[in-house]
Length: 346
Ligand SMILES: Cc1ncc(COP(=O)(O)O)c(C=O)c1O
Image 1 (cartoon, helix red, strand yellow):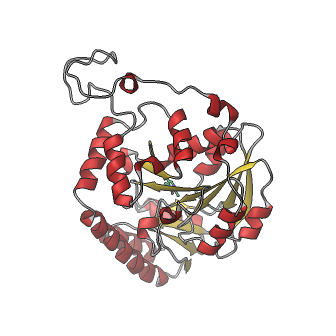
Image 2: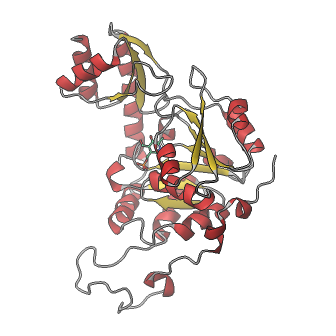
Image 3: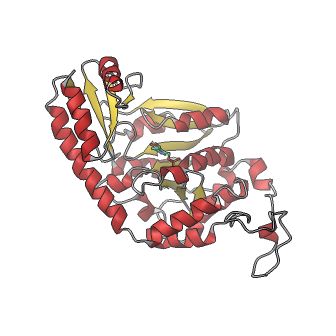
């Protein structure tokens, strides 16, 4: 195992940065008159700024995930955490990120926004991770490796042993994006945070929790990494409505979420079975997520046919290893039935 020094990985200017101090940072405690933040004094539901540190929400999430709240950063979607990881650790114009393709497109977009060079390698033909290939692509300036498990758009979990090898041998941060982990038959990498100083795990309320519109993403890592992200985030990145709605949802208990997960997993396998019966379908890839990657004889034709029936899927044909592939999100039984009926008419 390579010893990791988080401080020496961080950008110099970020280490020396004095973060913005908001009115609510300067005063902690209870008071009855707040004249410190230039807010409007007349009570609407939202006349006050939200808690910039999301203390209540973080405590509840930490408890839910069996972690400590100082191991958790909350972002305006996990997309914000992805961007902040680049800003905290990558020197623009010099540092690099390694990304095995095909995968979620925002890693490369955030790299581009931050002027960080992307070193793309390929997953195997069955979308598996080869640690040797990815490690060979790294150089002393590679600061981050993004791994998505279950992977978008292929749907499969990446091999635990391969990820372990990367975590042990790579002297930078290994980000495992688990946006779809709730649909998978596998433990989360959050259970192994104490083992690996360089492990960062991303999760989101956008998928299994059914709260994509709220924009709430989670980033779990050792407290040194979390402190750096907190230092550079916009002060009020999680708005009051999102904080209170997420709290409400978690306090309701996980049974409703578990019910949705079970239904989606059931529908995923029913949809797989029906897709196999469609003439134009050549292959339905295995999935541990809430979508299926489906190879068809002519993706453009199938896509346009579905659009003409008012059904939108994602055409992933232009993506490496995904020739003639559609990515189909698992919907309700009724939606999936409409999709299958439409495909039967192809
Ligand atoms: C792998 C992966 N990570 C992250 C996200 C974005 O999540 P959020 O809605 O939390 O920004 C997505 C969205 O599709 C995704 O597929």
